[in-house]
Image 1 (cartoon, rainbow, N blue to C red):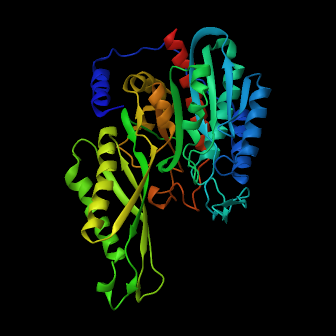
Image 2 (tube, rainbow, N blue to C red):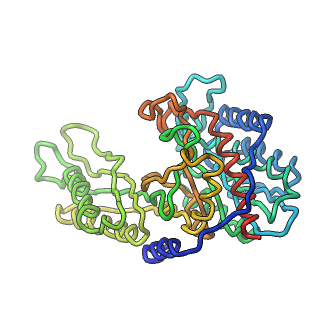
Image 3 (cartoon, rainbow, N blue to C red):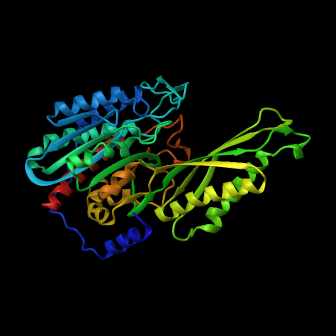
Amino acid sequence: MTSSRLWAAIIGASLAPSFAFAQSSPVSIDNTLAAKVIEWRRDIHQHPELGNQETRTAGLVADHLKSLGMEVRTGIAVTGVVGFLEGGKPGPTIALRADMDALPVTEQVDLPFKSEATARLDGKEVGVMHACGHDGHVAMLMGAAEQLAAMRDELHGNILFIFQPAEEGMSNVDSWGAKQMLDEGIFDDYAPEAIFGIHLGTNLHTGTVAYRSGPILASSDSFEIRVKGRQTHGGLPWNGIDPIVTASQIVTNSQSIVSRQVDLSSAPAVISYGIIDGGLRQNIIPDEVRMEGTIRNFDMDIRSQVLESLTRVAESTAQAQGAEAEVHIHEGYPVTVNDPQLTEKMLTVLREVVGDDKVIETALRMPSEDFSYYAQEVPGMFVMLGATPADTPLSEAAPNHSPHFNIDEEALETGTNLLVNWAMRYSESET
């Protein structure tokens, strides 16, 4: 969505009529199902799998959905699973989504169900851990599927349950996760008119839900720059072309793109370098330096400008030093945008399920999510669910992607209830 369309949508939402729901109490899962959700989460946590390797997790999910009497498809985007639940009453189809993959992280949390798993990644043996809460996402959606299947006679319309692989990405692959599932036609086949998702995080206390209308998570693009010079003795730099000095100038000059060349008053943007690699000895100026980094922002027009400018700045800086820069940009996830009208409509349900005091409006957040691809196709709503116990200071909680990441499992019941009530109440409101 372009910035003009995006902000027009937000302004339009402020003029749209408010939505009313029939008076009814939120649905809550019982203690038996809540215990099942925790059990599923622990099982998946102990057996994590990297992107497009989630065969065990996919099998667990598929067997569960089949046991609930759903239409189930497997092997989408390699290991993805979808379940389709037909309600007992006419109404729209909506989608609920969970991501299944783990990260190449060696767990350092002492749990009875601690991960000891390893896998091969780029030719290396790595530890594997659910360090981003996806084990909880899968368990919550499995619980929501069981609750909604038990209530299918009361359900207006249909629910598409999406269990997605490879949200964290894959090495040396152009397309993965959400985009691959869409490319393989899941929305063509089932045609949902809205989609919902939840992400667990330890930056909020348990049960707190952070939402935002419009942009909420940044786009994420990666880049590689190879700076080619000419090798020479470190004491005789004039006999070569120094790619290290050139690379340092590219790093510095590229920061002016976001500080001087784009309008940061409309949306923030970041260019960060995570890898600078070159040279073998302290007294040899090498032939080449390799750099890799990430670009984040919240406006798709600014995103295009930054990508174009980075190539120009790197090439021209290298040329000024007599070197050469080869720039390769991988366009990753778009900006995750919550549809303003859908957010307004379902905010009432959110507050009813978790309580007014547990709902906060979040600022823009720099992490990215491939839920963004779904939300480009149909109106989407994506929220953050806190999972740090109330008696633990947030400053002491290990962040997502840390080897010490650990969630408070009480959050899983809240997330499951939220998915169930979004599904039930959206369908009721549309009919």
